Each structure stands twice: as C-alpha cells, then as structure tokens.
Image (cartoon, rainbow, N blue to C red; front, side, top):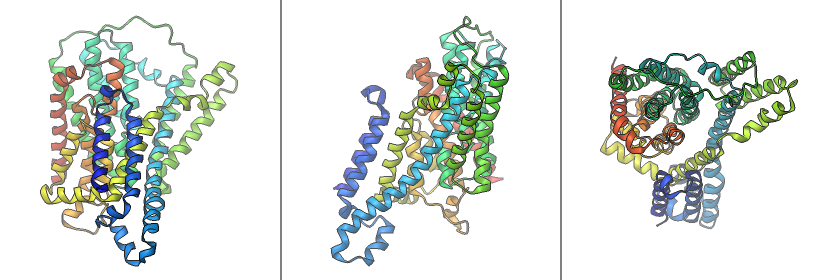
Length: 461
C-alpha cells in the first residue's frame, strides 16, 4: 500500500507542477510538499517497502539484524542514513546554484551586461536574429540558460518595438539558450547535476556535445530566417530611466571578473578534485570582495543598493526551493526502489540508450527536465570503466550520460513550458502557448532530431 501510495503522491505532485499556471499554486510549494510527503510515507511504511527487496543496501543490512532491532533499524536506516546521504548530494547542487545565481545577479546589477548590448547596432532583422542567437548560445554555456534568456529577452526589448517580432526573437532565444546550456557543465541545471554527480566530465561533455547542440540551434535558425521577410527592425524610444551608476571601466571590469569567476569553477574542480560548489562559493567570495572594495569611495546609495548583501536577497529563492523539493522527491523514489524497477523495465523492453534518452527529451517538453535527469541518475548507477557490453554505456562519460545531457537540455524547447528558459520568456513577453506551438514546436523538433543524428554519427566515427 505505502509503496503504491508513493507513486500516486509523486504523480499528483508532478501534475500540479505542470499545471502551475492553471491552479495558481507555485511549483516550489508543490515540489516541497511532494518531496517531504514522500519521505514521510516512506518512513511510515518502511517495514512494508523495504521488505519488498528493491533496496540492495538494506538487503545486506537485514541479514545481520535481530528481530527486536528490526523496527529501530528501519527508522535509523531511512532517517539517518538514506535521507542524510541524499541531502548532502542535493545541497551540493543547491549551494552551487546559489553561488552561480548571485554572481550573475551581481554582474547584471552592476550593468556589466550593458557592455554587450550597447555594441549591437544592426537593424537588419535576419542579421540581428543570428547575432542574438549565437550570443545566447555561448553566453548560456557560461551563465546558464535561464539567466541568459532573461538577459537576452530584456535586450530585445531595447532593440525591437514590434510585439510579434519580439516573440519570434524570444522563441529563438529559448531554443538557443537550451542548446547552449546542454554542452557546458555549468550551462543548465541538468548538466550541473550530471557533472556534480560524476556521470560526465568537463572535457568530454564539451567535446562530444558542442557540435550536436550547435546543430540543434542552427537548423531552427535557418528555417525561421528563411521564413522572415527582408525588413529592418524598429527600435523603441530611448528610456532615460536606465541610469549608468558605474563608469565604463567599472562595468567592463565587473563583467570580465564575473565571467572569469564562472569559468574558474570547472578548472578549480579539475585540479583540486573538490566538489564544484566549493569552487563556486570561493569565486562568489572573490567577486563579493572586489565589489566591496569598488564601492569603498562611492555614495551611501551605491554602498547600500549595490552591495552583495543586498543583491543576494534578489536571487530567485523559489527556484532553489523547487529544486530542493523535486530532488528530494526523486531521492525518495530512488531509495524506496521505484526507480530500480523502472530501469529494469526499460532495459528489458527497450534496451536502447538512444531511444530511452530521446524519449526523456520529448517528455521534458511537457514536464520539468530536472526530475527526469534526477530519476535517470537514480535508475542507473555509474559503472566501472572495465565493464563491457550494454553496461559500458553507463560508465563515466558513457554514451548514455552524454546523450542524456543533450536530450534533456534541448528537448524542452519543443514546448514553451518545457524549460525554465521558456517559462521565463513566456512570462516576460506574454507569449501565447498556442502561438509558440504553431510556429516553433515543429522547427524545434527538427533541430532536436538533427542534433541527435549528429551525436549518433559522431559516435559511429
């Protein structure tokens, strides 16, 4: 009963998250309730669930227990062993995200991104779209797809006055940001999870996924450019409210230092072998210290308004809590054995890593890709490099993990609600779900499959 109840609660939570805008309940609240409720059900029905035999670690422990210690050991095993183990893994991701989001927010608040936007002068619609998409693609690999989407959609508001044209640009920004985040270890939450989890390494994911991800962006870009009428964009009237509080040198300095801090993190992990969140928090401390020194002789307004202590309050805390809830929920299903059952079913019925990952990518356009990737990580352990046959796909930097990063990262572009980037653009520009579906779902699918084909061809060579 408890085992089945966990599945029902998870599905109900998932549906509520997908219908967030309809039921008017924030997905962070739903995710937190789902995650905590699943662990509550798990520990309440621990005896029944663990006796099903799906948890290999418990199966080893139970052989050494006496009958009178059985119930106490279940509580200890679930509450003090499994929960804390997953909490450590989840918090490492959350601390990384908090550090990254704060660094990006500091750059943005100090108008560092304005250096980029001011240098885009073309009014040719097709040329401007290519510039925006290529810039988005590479920025997303460094900043993350959500932040890049917000920055680039905001930029388009300053470059394009017509609403429908902005919708076209915003839609291509979604596709470009998701594709750009897929080939970088810090470009998307899913790749961050795989990187921190040890499924992929920096060098491998960049080399293997750069070209497929680029194709996933270029193909839709060519298709939409071909449909465009040859015309110039019209810029909106200049808004004088965007006051420059910092000199050009200061804004450029913050941009360079901030980007360098983000690029420093993979290097730090490679040489120290410490978890990535250590490098990210270290980088945040450096940028924090630099901004404090920079503000030393500024006005009291600058010192208070642009201080890192004030900026850190502005990061998207609800997003952090959403990840906390959903990762905790998936961890409960992993510990109880649900994901083990699912992985065995996939192996026996599909047994093809390409089809499995393509399906995960397609599903990620309907539901969030974070729990999908977390679920896959729970279903399949990292195999030792010495294994052969089908298991070899699951070694570190194996085909399954690399293709999972690509599919989960780019598949969400097929629907506007299928990624954090899409939801952000939808909110900023009020893009209709039906309009995006009619104009961009098919071309996004073509790009998704084209990139997947390139990945497959690369593996054959």
